[in-house]
Image 1 (cartoon, rainbow, N blue to C red):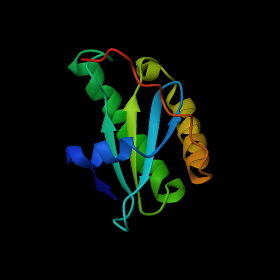
Image 2: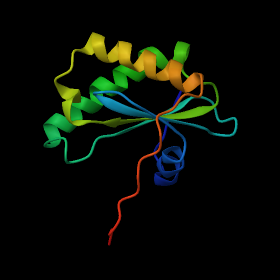
Image 3: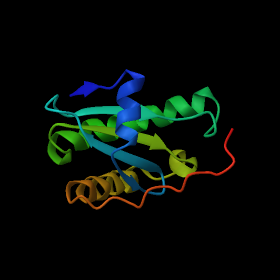
Length: 120
């Protein structure tokens, strides 16, 4: 499994399927035969560097355990951290990731977000 590092790959994944869970949002998008790849995004809204890094470590471990068996073949998977993700039980997050991956495999994403009006 490869790790997404280029911004263009993250932006492309943002145009893919979106499955929201309480602790994270999963984005999945076909990558044209490059295998299973993953990326993690945690913004400064979530907390300071210690909190963000802790969340990224948890996400990395979740993805390493789940993607080989449950991940979509030849897709990019991106996890975006949400506000309550750091306090959530790890076993509960593992179940939520399995659920999100199964929904993505069925092609059942959440409706797209509304665009903000008045954006500068």
